[in-house]
Length: 183
Image (tube, rainbow, N blue to C red; front, side, top):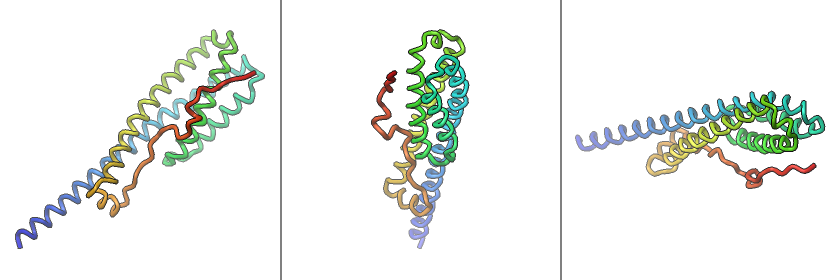
């Protein structure tokens, strides 16, 4: 009788500790995603200033400028919890920003403009922060995913509705390519 109670107590404690570990991991993933979201917002806030500065120098680059604005608005419209949708939208925005910065290479006066140079440096700092936030998020997602898939914690994860989280990575190999600009 005492053995059965001891086994039952150990099983209950295991479920409690495993459940709490899964909750902790899920919270770390959500915190990490919040960090990425903050950095993406900082980048989105820089874009209008960058666009206005470039507009003064590159009036005939309207399609590139409009694409960046449209993709920024689309990325901002993705719901906060939609990680996969946000990853896709931000990937497209990153490509468009790369094209915009490549266009700036064709305008020596623009490159020499202190306002543009400061905006470009700020954007580079934010991109670095996004990379660090992405690594932290992916590490937290990996830790949760291992718990969700590993036996026997996967039994508890399945019972309580814990699921895998997607990694924040470039899904399309074409997105890794350096943009080319042709006039």
